[in-house]
Image 1 (cartoon, rainbow, N blue to C red):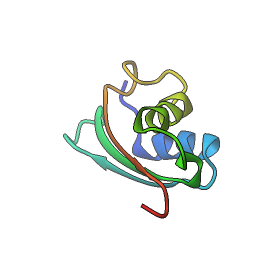
Image 2: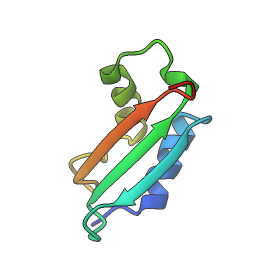
Image 3: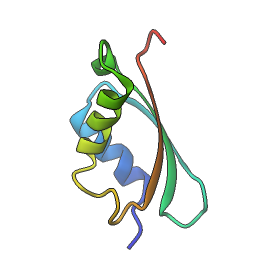
Image 4: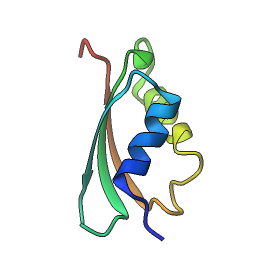
Length: 78
């Protein structure tokens, strides 16, 4: 079962409340998305740590309902 873009955004914002999230469905199949997440929570964190925050927000959906997520993260100042 595919995951809806709105659900991805909801999960991210639930864990990272100040996040500005943009989601694009790359293949039109509900399984392959690109996400840009901008949050002050990423300040001082490495890119790997930033991505881990987002993946943790998805509560284990990666590899299951959500097959692929191309992720870009940044702080508001970036």
